[in-house]
Amino acid sequence: MNTEIIKIILAFLVLINPFSALTLFLDLTRGYSMNNRRKVARVACLTIFITISFFTVAGETLLKLLGISIGSFQLAGGILVFLIALNMMNGEGNPVKPDQENFDVEYDKHAAPSTASAVVPLAIPMMIGPGGISTVIIYSSQVSGILQVSAILIAGLFISLFCYLALMAAGRISRLLGDTGLNIMSRIMGMLLAAVSIEIIVNGLRTLFPALV
Image (cartoon, rainbow, N blue to C red; front, side, top):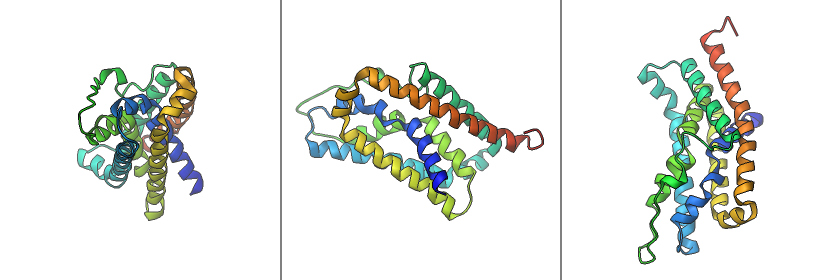
């Protein structure tokens, strides 16, 4: 069980990758007090945990309602995750997440602090996008029983807390790593994500073609 939790945490970490959202968080909370920054970070990370929890519980049911087999979704999701990994290793970021340059963040020092942007675009889709949601559904479709489902929820809680800590240290991390450091980290996460994606693809092939794999 502990090994499974670590593996799921690793997958969530490289897919959600809070470091990729640090610049956007700093732009959205420019001029905010520390208390208001904490509120934005809390709302964003709570959104991530709720999203993971929802698709953990309802993901397989949604697939059945849409008439999609688990094996087909595993194969499609694994390919999607592998393409994300390739882009990350090439230094091109996550192709299914928007570029921060696409967000026109206007700063108004007279505007009241708001947490609305913590949900969209910060949490969704900047931090947890299609790749993360697909991975949650894939893992939830492979487990049965309260203990195994709890493992995914625990992993979701852990990564949500990690995201909160990363956002609260956004300024220091950005200054410490710089663009070069963040780029190197993204490439390393891409390599780890590629390994996760291959495992998902192999499991999908086993489900679809049990006699061949």
